[in-house]
Length: 184
Image (tube, rainbow, N blue to C red):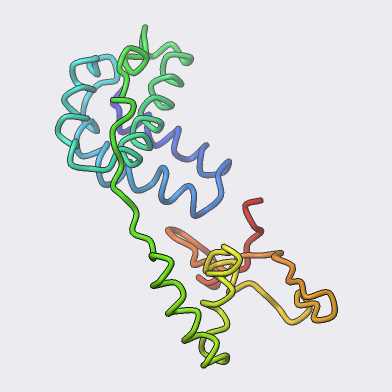
């Protein structure tokens, strides 16, 4: 069986098991943009350890997190092919991504910069309340957008974080901007 044909079978099953956004970024994107163009026309049994190494060397310009996502998808597909007795061994089992690859430093505000922003927010409460809350509490933008008046308790001086507002990626029905549960 050709890799692309089997990938479609696994893709359809996974699509029903994973949330839309997670599926789009974690599966659909690596499959369509990278895996199929490189390995799509190959018979499953032709995908060797060497082919996998070449794939990851060719895409070494991508971030380590992105490559881990590609590895997860490829490993899952080949593991399922092994379970379905389409290949004898999963060549991904022997390949290990470089562990401990340094990730890019994240930019963050210095305490002085954060205080300047907070001062601005205090002077402009209508415009600055969202940024103020994010800096002071650590909630993310999606959680900030999900706050409703019923979530704000002025007497207790608390805000309940109950939902995210996200933009759906990939195939969707209806509105693209939707309410979603928080991660934790």
